[in-house]
Length: 418
Ligand code: PHB
Image (cartoon, rainbow, N blue to C red):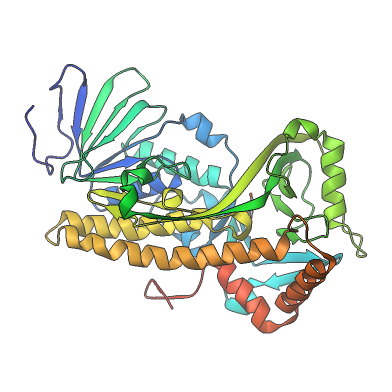
């Protein structure tokens, strides 16, 4: 089979009976969620062509509820790199958040403490903006593919094979393959077991997430701790809200009629200040298990991992999407350099920059999770200690500043963490 040079981007041939279309691009991307698509977008801006594939259809991705908080830098990047400015119209800038315990809310004023804010803009909207931008820019994205194969990642001529949704069989020949295939990544296992470490932590609880048709109950997010467990009050639109409460990982959504859901949520936020939630029909229910995960290394041969494929965090600290977007910001630069005169050594800069932030985020997500959740079997001492810790966080300037700095995404100097 003739092999075209890898820099012969965009050429299309039909060289093999089991392959209908062969495409040559510098970068093949497995996973067309926000990480994969933002990488493709950034590469395209630098003149580097790519093909991205995903097992899920565009509709499936668009209708899967995910977390909703973006760091100000990530929000700015969506606008400034030309993805879309819809976030400025449909997103909501939050200058603080509420921590609620002992029946009272305590506002952490991000703006006053660290001069930063975050944006409430659901991941599904980030995805829609990115998918639209790829379409607008004639980017090559295949949703709903089947039979994907990632081949030869230990060589300098890795390949991707898949069947497109129209039944055509594709082969993509690339110089690099990026595994941005999410928390159930298959790409991560292409790093040989003897050469990788998978750091892993499972939690003894999950989140029961709902979408409800109701007006907003609060102007900003409310993270609530109660002896019965955690609750998070988030928002989506004027008429649809997103809320979560701590539950058992094996909880069945069918066992939760609307009344039981509202009773549980109301009890978790109840307090002397009379705060109550505006109720309405529950439109969607899901149980979200959560875990902490990091794979080291994030690169092997011609394969590089980005986003949830390389690291997963519990959703409590709202770090997941932000970490993924940070990974691909660093990775796009590094790949452009690696494809130029600098060659492969440029890739060595990726993991140290990405992983430092990942471990900070792992710590913060774990910390915020243990701060706000009730561990099964928690004693009275454990519960009182936890309230003591919360009181330390909201009642001291150092505590409030710590939370504000971590939640808004850490101060940087020239792009690097300080
Ligand atoms: C959400 O709005 O879905 C959301 C917000 C903050 C989190 C997690 C989820 O920490």
